[in-house]
Image 1 (cartoon, rainbow, N blue to C red):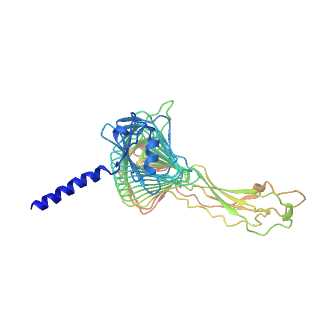
Image 2 (image 1 turned 135 degrees about the horizontal axis):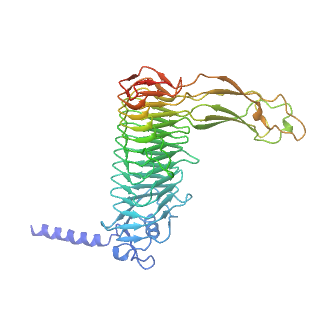
Image 3 (image 1 turned 180 degrees about the vertical axis):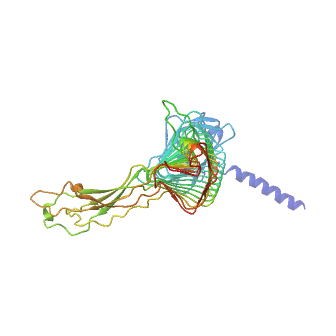
Length: 517
């Protein structure tokens, strides 16, 4: 027994000695630190700048940076060193840890992975380039203007991470290109998120109880972005529109997603009437509502639940591969362009499954306001470098023109002066075009020009309804004046299908279910 105790004691002593020789498990940064004299491996030996700590972490096996107390980063922290495949963790020493901090990352810098946990960050936070950033457990961004840009940027909010805004009235998170994901109870409070694609389509997803609440502007603003909202994600209490789906964006809401309590019916000299309390759709956008999505308790001057317009443009380019003209050597100026235009909607809203659009209010269109805008498609033919141009028109096909189509779900319990369920303004006109090329073009130093004059109108299609009731029900809506269910402003704006239109009321007793002037 005595021999055994001796051996154990030796092991304990040896283990203690070995542990004392291991390197620190974190790099430390503090306002009281020093980049030149300290080694950064303890709170007492902390670095002064985040840049120094990040560079040290990137170059070593120790990938944690700990903030001691309230630390202010002077100027901007430019990260020219990449972390590579390893993720660097930025965290706080205790509940008093806070960083006032501007982080910039050049687009040509090496790739980095950065995770922030248990730390409160204030001031501006700017990040771009090939960075994978995670706002993790108990990370709090308070009164921060969060800006990100770059197609290789990936930002994830998870594990109760919070972006809280009390100073700035509009978007607290602004991302150009890249990918943005909110999940696991992540929260943006007091402001919204603006995600856009410039040269590349951006992506944004809200899932797993992610929430945007009480924005002083819009909740989500999308431009050339693919957006998904699912798994009980919610947007609530925004002063303006819950989701604005703009130019070339797509939005899919499913699996108990909800937009509630957004918008307003008031307006002023400096604040125009609001179009769309829950969702505003326009500009080549496609929106699909499915599953058990709920659009409820929203308000606007037009479209308490949803405001839909067919405004938008689309361009399609054809590279010329047809035979040349008789004198191609005289057509030395390349890249001559001609355009063919389409009038018609390339914006669509599809409602299906068990979607509920309920309890919304507006002057016109309590549930949905659908209006025809001015939309077009531009088809461009481009010459090759040798001056070739098309001798005949390729096929020019109309896009899918659907307006608002309801295949399932319920529009109920909405209120408006006119069109409590749906206010359908106009039918959508679609017009074909064709291209007729010139018979000939030749001559010394002569090149083809003004070919737009050869665009001719062809056959016109029948109008497409602004609102089509293929399935589901429009019921239990209440108009103060006329059009309890559907107010169709012109003939053809509404098309009945297999859906149910019944049980709606109108104060004037006229057009309780369907009103057409």
